[in-house]
Length: 320
Ligand SMILES: Cc1cc2nc3c(=O)[nH]c(=O)nc-3n(C[C@H](O)[C@H](O)[C@H](O)COP(=O)(O)OP(=O)(O)OC[C@H]3O[C@@H](n4cnc5c(N)ncnc54)[C@H](O)[C@@H]3O)c2cc1C
Image (cartoon, rainbow, N blue to C red; front, side, top):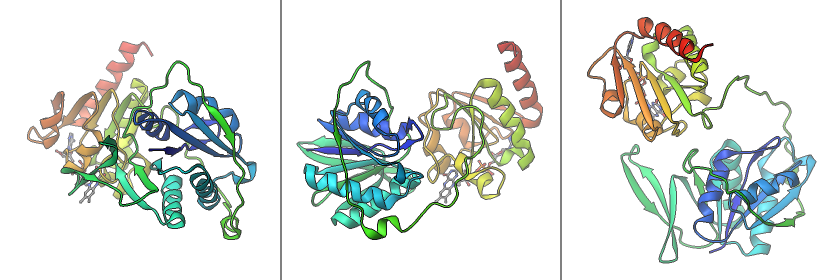
């Protein structure tokens, strides 16, 4: 099995999700990484620390801000020249577009929404949740190359102390159509504190917060705890909080050390996105809310009364 992992970067930071996929792939055997875009050469040593034995570098400033098609050209060349039989991605808007484009280009099978993968008697088997995440099914590929796209947060990205990789420079010819689209504008969402994917603490709000403006209560608690704010789909759909904060089946999968659920009922579609958190604390006024069935600590009461006092207590404890 020869595995290639697309490692995404934003500026000079490698994305945690793709480093997790790289680290997982390294447990299956020798794995190569590919970095494409401006300033990526400097990021190659970091990829080596997450298990890449070889790092393909397609350094090209003109590929920033990123568009998928030129990256499909680069990947197709590396797969064909290097004889890779497996290409893995961590899900993101960019990676999903590239994976789909590469599948079409190479006439390859793409299994998406995977949360794990293993080698069984030399055969690659993917694990994919199905039936609203109530079962986990094994999926395979009929032919090579096989492409796989993993849910965010599927694997821990734990670096090794050291890591050496062979660096290979790549230059690809771009298809004419690949460069005809251009990014005209990009806006960075303002946020202070850690992102949901990286946070050790997540304070998530649901419909029980009562109104969009009450999300400031969740934000204040998150700030006091040094964490990030998450949300349920109900509040995101209602326009109370941005989609990027949605946790669950159709949102992000997270596993922080502490997950504080505020006014969240605990629907299965939310549960699958946060159930692997180390400690779950729920505050809900309904003692029969399903969230209490999988919480480590449950507080039955009204958020509006509990939250301001809880935030004050955390601040006092931290001396801030
Ligand atoms: C295909 C599909 C995909 C989905 N994907 C997702 C997903 O990715 N993520 C997701 O979250 N959902 C998802 N959902 C929606 C999911 O089924 C639930 O509808 C949603 O999670 C409910 O959100 P909620 O807990 O905020 O709201 P509710 O279910 O309305 O719960 C609100 C809770 O707040 C409590 N409450 C009310 N007032 C107070 C108060 N003053 N103090 C304390 N507690 C209070 C109530 O007792 C209640 O338990 C999906 C649904 C479908 C069908």
